Image (tube, helix red, strand yellow):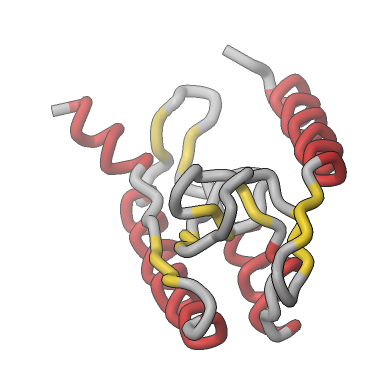
Length: 147
């Protein structure tokens, strides 16, 4: 089991690697330039999903994390997505690999907020991408395994 400091170091390290990979895998697209981790010829589906230390947009085909700044999203929506990402995992009891009291409800509220944000992303990008939402399911897994 990782202690908190080691966990934070790993997040920082993974974030640095992700940024370096993005710089190496710069792909020039038709009409727009996108810096992305995925090597898909063309991104057709964008998945909105929260995860620790990651942007909320993912390639729907190869599941690579995409830089949301590479998409024409309004600044206010980007701020709301960043705040939503920052809230991810508040229902997780990291020390005991479980959920905190009321965690299932917290996760569900986070998912409801994500559905609204994904809808706004979909409206913004509708002519360019198929936008889907992937809910957080950590507490569901923990509860299911406990039964």
